[in-house]
Image (cartoon, rainbow, N blue to C red; front, side):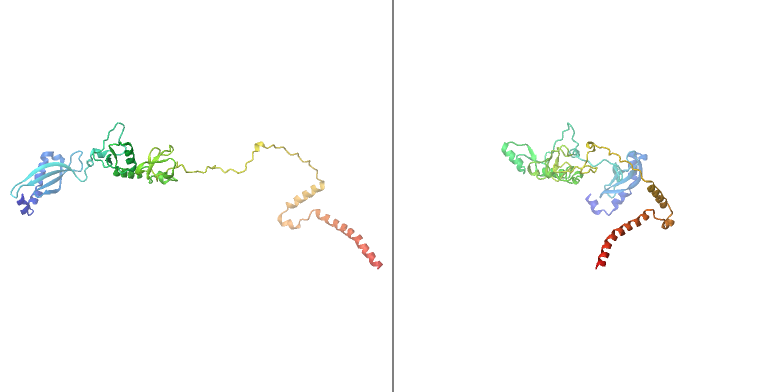
Length: 319
C-alpha cells in the first residue's frame, strides 16, 4: 500500500474512474435494470478506491442514488467491487438529523403522568453541600441545618432569567409595549427571593393575563394598580339641568280684541296696494294721509308764541 501511494502517477485513479461498466453490472445484479438510471459521476474515496454514482429509479426514493465502490489492490491487479449501497442525493427527502431523546423534549411537552429525569451533570443544578452563590438560600440552609440534594446553580439562574426576560411576560412582548406602566411599580407585584428579586416577581392580579406567572419588572399590562382613568360620558351633558316635571304651567288670559276704526283699515289697504306696485313705479307712490296731519301742529306753536310777543311790543311803545 505504501508503494502504491508513493509511486502513483494517477494511473490508479484513471483505472478506477474508467470502471463504469463494471460498477453498472454490479448494481444491475443487485437491484435490477428497472431501478438503475444513468451514470451521475465518480467520488474519490482514497488513493485506491472510488465510488460510482447512478440515478435510482426506486419507488419512494426520489433523488436517491446507487453508490458502487470499486477498489484496486495494485497496478497489475484488476478492479474489484467493494460494496453497493443506496444513498440520498442532494435533492433527496431524508429524515431530520438525529437528536438524542433527552434533547427532543421541549417546553410544554411534559404531560400529566410523564416523567422526565434530568441529566446527571445538568449545568443548571449544583450539589446542595456546595455554596449556591445565592445569599437567601445559604441563609436558610444555615438556619435550618437541612438542605436539598441539589439547588439552582449560577448558570441555572442566568438561563432562567434569560428565558423569562425574552418570554411572553418580558418587556419585549406586545402586552408590555402597549402597557401604561411597568410591573416594578405595581401593587400586585410580589418580588422573588434571592438574587432574582431585582429583576423578577410574581403577578397576583386576577384580571391580568400574567396572574400566577413570573413576570419581568419591566413587563406591564392595563391592570396596573396605579392607573387612574377619568370616566366621562360620551354624550355631552350640560352643567345646569332643569327638571321640567316639577314646574307648574298656567295658561295666560287672552287679551280682548279691540275693533280698529274704518279709516285705519282703509289706510292699511291702500298701503298694501302701494307695496304691491312694481319697483319701476315706486318713486311716484304718494304718501298716505299721515303726511297731511303735520301742518296742523304749526298753528298751535304760533298761537303759543303770539301772547309772549305782545307784551314786548307794548313795553316798547311805553318807552
